[in-house]
Length: 332
Ligand code: PEP
Ligand code: MN
Image 1 (cartoon, rainbow, N blue to C red):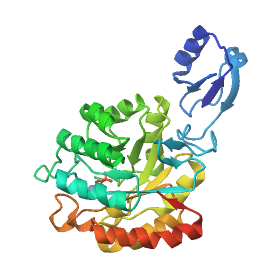
Image 2: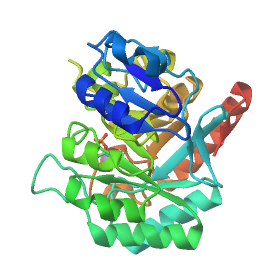
Image 3: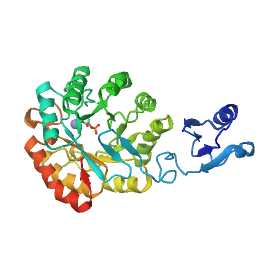
Image 4: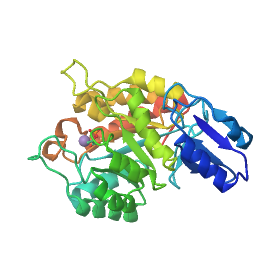
């Protein structure tokens, strides 16, 4: 249940209600919100006089639901806005992992050449094997920061555990929570305490309900700047790496108020399928696309098979233009 309290509700009443309902408090400019479990359907009569408006839900998808707020959240990165009422689809590009200054500079130059705004690159890689490349860590973040300063790009990079959150906040514009990390309470709670935008990637065995509940951890803790990213789920099919759940995306577009970014690279797992999948994703009218691109994918230290080379990325960018125009979308 979400309860909007009357303006000027006394602090001691607010505290009493919070305790009794085991609620989260969210302070807005003129009023407070209390968020309880969706199991609570009404409040004690003695509290009723303090309530301006209330919303009852049949699941814990509450703050992120259209039934609470049908206006899509807008993520304001200054030079670029994601979601809200914009017709923007941000095309985020860059390598799976930051590997060297030369490599990430080449990625930054590619984005600048195409007038794109957001550079991706992992520094704390959540690898399935301890023997695989684990990322450059803080050194990688510093390289991303350098690209941010030199090229005026916005940066997205992932946090693997909560101990890195301070560094990731400092050096990025969007914090990425990976598919394997999205259940991590330490990360979710740390992200709730900042106002920095957070992109949560759906785990490959995660239901839409669990996915939106991960977002609720961040939202109920006071950070409204959450983006959902569909990146493929595991099915019986093994010919492709994962299965991109576009039906799930349609469901999120209908019932959630959060911006949605699609990641065809991780879903497909092979570069050959990425361009056509990206067009299908754009046609869904999503708020963003995140595509892995590497100056030389053959030598990439992670996800080599799915990264586009830079000429493939440029070709894709060009091929998206007429489609975007016909859909009334600006690719940024
Ligand atoms: C990535 O974006 O490189 C990544 C590791 O993604 P995911 O968490 O979706 O596997
Ligand atoms: Mn990757």
